[in-house]
Image (cartoon, rainbow, N blue to C red):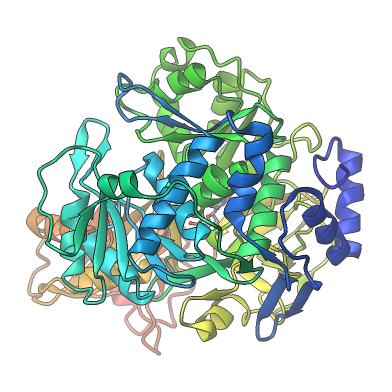
Length: 636
Ligand code: WT7
């Protein structure tokens, strides 16, 4: 049908123009085409971006799991919904059909209900990439509970902050996780976190690694025996279009993580639509997104988008380097993957290894390659294109965010000519704007500025859990009636967008969004530390890495202790997780500050990037002398 599956560039422009001229009509037609609505909407869109309040498909009733599972059972009951590829390649892959998925989700939903979980309750999920992770999201959605997945690489402190922020009373976890040749004691991390979560009364534990863990009486229960007893069907709870579906935390420029709230109908329509078009999905394609379901990429393009289309989605427990650097390609060959979606950091890591790892596998099933999470540099793009796509697979460089729910700017394969490092054109229904520092929109092409979106789209987050003011202040106050993304971008002479990176205090490390403030807060907890500032610097594999400038309480001489460095990284690991560890730590007696006491990160950034030839004006600094000291002590 016309709105689904754009076939060429001309059609893209037609559909795009239509979507801008009459967004309501456009999104109404998309919603009418392909979903199961228990009651039709009264109004497609109602919005006021000054508040901001946005509702899509108001008045509609639905359950997203009926759309992702039940409605496929008649036509595709025995089709594989999820292929589970375990960490260990010698463990058998599991194929879960739509029928089986239905039963497993229903049973799980019944277990949750038996434990008192009701519509609107928050459920924290802290699981490795195993089928129960996808199933637990869907089980929550089945009964209208709001899932809050915390990536299983986060520390116990990060976990308890998130559990408490949204007041979860139940946690779903496992006895542990496999990660390459290591195991991770997830249950131990949960136990530690729960010492600070008085309201959690139930922990459901999936058995995965058969480790000998402590089960706290009354609170902790093994999941499997409960599932075995549970009834195999569960009536889906009818949801309003704008009922919350999930919370997902993202870091911001202040210490506290932001619980982004996504709602039911708009998110469903948006992820389904973008999945189908960006990946040109066809019935019987096998789709693999290598992200973890703990990030929005996994929510939208492992679980909801593919399943809403009745697709087969691969859920991979392992890592790209185990048992060797050929693992991704082995899995592509084994499951005849048609669309492969990964992050530039993974591509760069694999590009460093011998070509033999990809050459020895048959990659001929691949049709489309995707990239997400950070800008993809030209070298990585070419490596991906030449060695994986064999110059025969369009690469979709997809720009989006946790907040946007789904892909916003991306080529549409076979329609949009691609250029390395360009995310190219906005998807239908997406209206980007580039703004200058004075709040004026930059019209025309060949401009660069701050990337905003000037009209609502169905997948947008509606609020920050428990803090709507922060939602407004963070995203809708910089530019009137526009959503500010935090990214900079340029628009070239043909109207293509290229994302140039964050313009705020967020640093993307290996595709993970890290706020500098939470990391600084963690470091400052160290008894020897007086103050700290974190900046990013370019890194071959991670894209960016973190450089910390740290003032110690006891001066006299700058103590350049490796011990202290380890302790600082240890604290960061405890507070946030290993992903936030610093690559470089420089001890200094001061930090460059403005007269109002603000740290001049611009200067620190230049030093970290080794671009000290052009530090800009430092005369307004309160303490210009410290700049020389920091330059002299910079870590190469
Ligand atoms: C930030 C959002 C989108 C899901 C994963 C990350 C950066 C994302 C691209 C891209 C350049 C990108 C942006 C964005 N980013 N995709 N294709 N090109 N930059 O979600 O953790 O919310 O991070 O990732 O800076 O704002 P997230």
